[in-house]
Every structure is written in C-alpha cells, then in structure tokens.
Length: 219
Image (cartoon, rainbow, N blue to C red; front, top):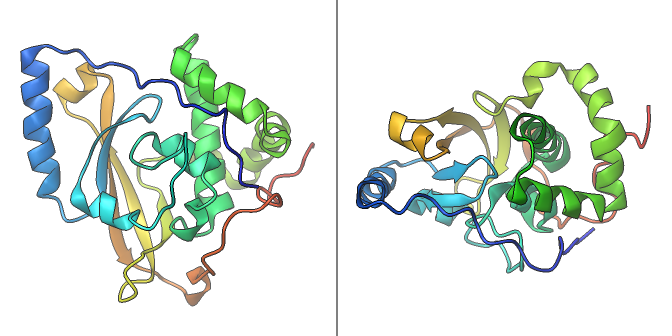
C-alpha cells in the first residue's frame, strides 16, 4: 500500500521563538553534526526539529512524498511512506508496530492535540492500519510484551544505502536535556552496529497493500 496520508501534512508545532531558545537550538545543531551516528530532535508528535548529516545520509535515497518525509515527521515516515522498508529492516514488526503502539500511548497521555489528531485521522483512512490500531495492537503487545512499545533501548534492523554497510542493526537511544524537555523535544540517536544474523538481510522492496500482515484484523 502506497498510502498518501491525507494529502497535506499539517504545519509542525511552533517552538518558542525566544532568542535564548533559538540560540540553544542553533548550538545544539552544531553538536548534532558532530555525532557520527544518525540523530534527530523531535517533538512529541515526532515532528522533526533538527537532523544531522548522518541521518540525512541514511535516508538519502528516499523518494518524495507529500506528507511523510523522514526529515519532516519521522512517525509519518514510518507509517505512511512506501519507501520506508527500503531503509527500515523488518519494517512491520520492528518499526511500524512499535511506533504505532507508541503513538497510541502518546494519544492517551496528551489528550486533545492537533498534530496527533491529524495522524489519527490518516490512520483511520487506511483500513488495514485502522484494523491494526483498533484490534491488532492489544494482541501484538500481549504477544511481545509491554517493553516492545518503548523506543529507548530498542534494537532494530536497518538497511543502509551505503553498499559497504548494507544490513545493520541500530540501538535506538532517546534522551533529552533540561532545555530540550522545556521545549517539548527529545533527541533520538540510531547507534549503528553490525547485524547479528544474516536473516536481517532483506530485499529492498516497496510496501504493498499486504503490509501489517503480522497483525490480525481482530482478536
């Protein structure tokens, strides 16, 4: 399924535009560029505030999409971009379902939120993803455990566009500073490492209508 997710992504939430906040983010961007692993700063909706060169390099072969580019909103990229499986290995089980579950938890904890509601509407427009959201997630969480919903510490497969790197794994590290937390943001770093097993070498295929097969339509 190459779902076009609503036609136009809502404008990202505005961060406080105080001189102090702007200066901090400018300096933090310099810090991020000094990190060799792919890294980004996101808000609670996964709207992307900052990325570094390693992140942009990892997703450099991703095709255009009106609403789900990885440098705009990473949650939308994982859920809706048809090219996501070309970089995110084992896309359904290792990336899509955990982030869908994380999104459901965020919706519960934040209450009314324009950005989150927009993603929820786009999920509802996709019958397969809506079935997964409503019926499949509880089944999946029971099967894999509550820990699978957490982003920090997760070990997930990647397919690096650099042919010398190829199939890899990454440790997802989520952290925040006091100032980033005040801005409602967190830093996400993909700590790259060699894949542990050859089974992680997947074909770089675009997602089709059969995605989310690992989630039953109902209990």
